[in-house]
Length: 186
Image (cartoon, rainbow, N blue to C red; front, side, top):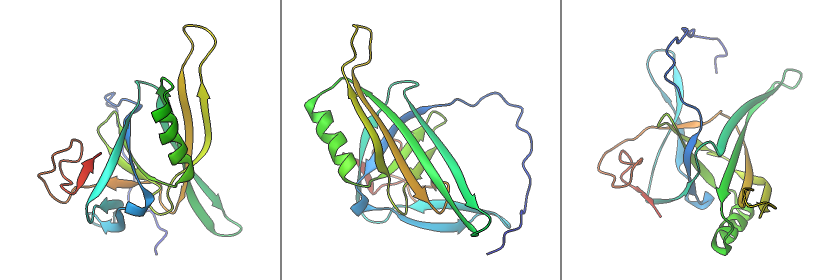
């Protein structure tokens, strides 16, 4: 593996980016997507995934400005190791028993999570090792205007920052997975 930089990055003066997450699609770890490194262009690699077999993704919608993703690189020069820590913060409104059961199952498992950001990008988190709930909070609030719902923090530790969803087909019925005919939303 070469460790040399092969290209730079030009300044992007456009102010057309939007932060935040539209929602997340959760896939049981046992139904993992096949992950691979695919070469794109000359001397450039991009970590992409393609779906193999039939998969069901469960959609968890988030309210505007109530979810965020941060990915940190962790490196130790003395040991020559490096990994990426994926931190996903989700807030879901209204306490219900059904939602409490789903949060419990998230905490029991180590699912793979596809994040759809407000730019329309799809990123797979926990592609190799899954994501783990590290903090969960259910709150009723005290005042009428206080939050009532769930806060969940999930962490993944992976060899790459994230996998980009790149469709290999067409004909899928469920947006945003129209390029993935074998992924359905449950």
